[in-house]
Each structure stands twice: as C-alpha cells, then as structure tokens.
Image (tube, rainbow, N blue to C red; front, side):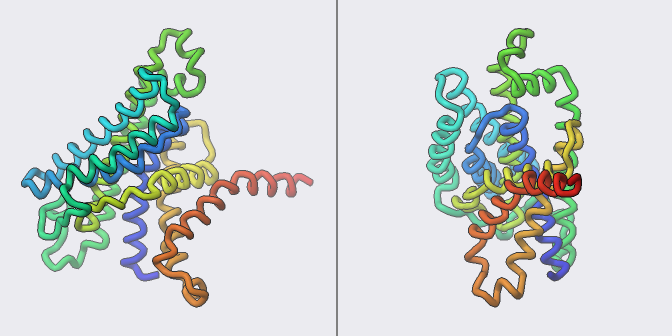
Length: 300
C-alpha cells in the first residue's frame, strides 16, 4: 500500500470515527437501535455542500450540517417517545424520508464542490502536494475535539442521567430522570456527530452524492464492535477511544483487502467493497466469541 493510500484510509477511518461515536451513543449508551445514520450522514453532507456552494463559510456549513443531523435524530426520538412507535421502525421511517429530503436539499442526485472553498482549503498547498497528510490531520482535530467533548459530557449530571436511561430506564425514572428528554438529547447528539462526518466526507470527496449514506450504520457498528473487542473497558473515555481506533482499523482492513494482489488475482475489485464490508462485519461480530474461546483454550 502506498503512503498516499495509507493516509487516505486513515482519513476515511477518522471520518467514520465520528459516525462510530454517534452509533456508540445510540446503540450502546441509549440502547436505541437507530438506522437514521444512513440518512443523517448524507443529510449532513447535502446541507454542508449546499451552504458552501451558496457562499457560506465552510466551518459554518459544517455546523449547519450538524444541526440538520441533530434535527433528524430529534424526529426519530420524538416518533418513539411521543407517538409510541418502535425504535427500529421510527428510525427506518426517518431514514426513508431523509432520502427525499436530501434530494430536495441538493436539487439533484449529486452536487459537485470542485473549486469551492472547504475547511481544508487554507491549509492545502496550491499544487495539492501536502493534501494527502494535511486533510487527515484536520479531520483528526475534529475527532479529538468530539472525543474530549463526549468525555466531558458523560461525566456531567446530564451525561450520567443519559447513561442511566440506557442502562435501566425504569430505575432512572424512579430516580427522577426525565428519560424521554434524555433519549431526545442523546439521539440529537448521535446524529449530529454522524452528520458532521457526512459534512467532512463530501469536502474530502469533492462533492455530495445521494448514495453516500448506504451502509453507514454497518460501518459504524463494525467500528464499535472492533474497538470494544480490542480495548474492552467500562470507562467512558476508553470506550470512546476504542471506537475511534476501531473505525481507523476497519478502514485500513478494507484498504488492505482491496489492495491485495491475492484478492485481485481471484477476481476481487472495488466493485466488491460492499461484499468485503459484510465479511468484515461478520468477522467483527464473531471476534468476542473467538476471544472467549481462545481464553478457554489457554485455561484448559
């Protein structure tokens, strides 16, 4: 693998680390199976792209994308807590609706950003010679900022209440926690992070596309599972770090698989990305069981 490809996979992994942190909040913290991610990721990208094309500062465009993602998360949570719709079904309804919303926002299936200012533009050389390492460095800044904010938030009273809501909502209500409010706030934060990933993704790719959200939730879940297997911990700071590591490793695995001469010789190529993704997710899901089996073998 070339240095450029290595940095490219690292950049992609960091973007999906934001997605993984969002998935961590919904699936692990709130115990809320949320498929909104497949819609909020392209939503963040679509809003950011339209704002940038319209002349808005790209940093503010990212904030606008986050706000749109947060709104999507609020709608999903509201459908569940106020209308009593099942969590999974509520998220599917919002995900399906967001496809049309994203088309409306962009006005077309795709929206190019070639020649537009992005958050990376002030730092990239005119000949793009440093682009391959500058962009991952800036995305890393976003990821570290998000991690530190999550570490701080989950140590506050509101964060602890949210964790209690996911662990045992009945007990949390008995202690005076507004569980419905916590679910809405948690889903807003979750999808805001995912949408931020989408906003950064379209700026690295040079355009927004309606199909960029396909498989987002699968990648996020895989990153969470890989991270939890490699860095098991109950401490929230370590848990958040683990999903970041899991996302980066996951994208590196994908890049290595696609660049493998052996796989190319037997006919695998870029068109098989979704197949490789599915295989890696299955392996990630089995990793905890394999780890326990190996421990039992060592003891015996």
